[in-house]
Length: 527
Image (cartoon, rainbow, N blue to C red; front, side, top):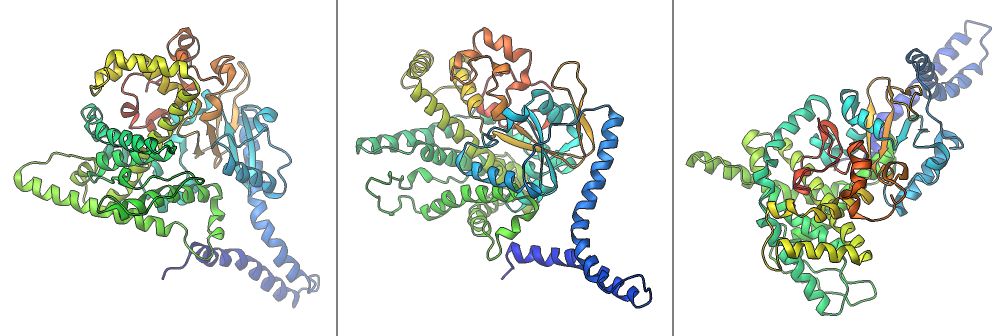
């Protein structure tokens, strides 16, 4: 049985940590025998002092070099968050507590009020800068793209889940993965609405059944199942059918039998349970950076969930390989699914699995989040719900399935989705790693550029940026889809498209953007 992450981490770290103290102690004790000026107690003292020196001296030296480079570049330093405690432990505690209870990226509390839209923290000797400035995000994602990567902390923390897939890769590996998956997201693929119609009809059916019982339904759970079934069918050609599983009742209501409807339901039930937990564990590992193995001393919290995910994905890969063989024999090599496209281009099953899981992560949660918050907002604003319903009835009618052209023509539908994405972006917080020391544009016109040291983790908050009143107007916190249709769109968006980034920007723009909004966004950055 393999060791848990914690003991492995200690086995790798302890020799590096205790090797220098032992060497210093032995050297000083040896010299003390021949040099009278060196007392006997120098050995133990040197062994103790070398440990903090190993950590802090490199930091002080890096600060010295960075300060010299900052002056050479004629740049200003970024406001530094004070009062974080030793190694930033107070800040770390605050961020971890807020992460559990607040909407992701809303957990900086009052730091933006104190330090502005760009500030610098140091957590466990690691530099982190947080920005909500469109010009900074544009620099990291587009104009200085080659200098900003996902970085080693992100890569290592997420590798057990994402492998070397497109969301966890940098440089040439990322370019390879991008080229591998991009062909499948052509318009003829994303405009095939049959898959969506089938699973949407089932979602509506189970909703009606539950409501007829006089019981509420967990809408977030429902759309999570819907998007999982769509994603598994669209990407893998293997239907999860999680909508056939028993829906949860509220804690105060009756419970439902665990009898399962479809013959493979136990697989779907395990996957529905394990998939979000695998993502949550991976995110926690990333937040704890290099020290996350210390939280998993007795067991690998991710492994059982990855076993469930792989047990679902691997048979789908084998089926795609068999389809490829049959297609070659028949002279047919059409890629029916993303998995078929991957199998057609490579025989590396690890690569195929990594890419498939990456796309499942992207395809399920982003759409489910958007649907959840769109319905939440419409339920609180019945006037917009009535307006949207009327547009759909006028264009599509009560029975017909909408087409790509129908969706493209429904401007208010587009505005509702955009406004939901603005207030509740599916990826509210993201990060990049500075490869080399550089600068970001000044916040104040005519000011000096702002210095970014090499090895700094840049956290950029789309959530905060989407809610800034100076960027979106005095009503920025209000849900108003008309802002994407009336004069406000021209006033705020057209002149500064990087204030609206639900799909990221630059070369790593979301491949599924056209699938999510099959119409041109006024604020879509051009590259």
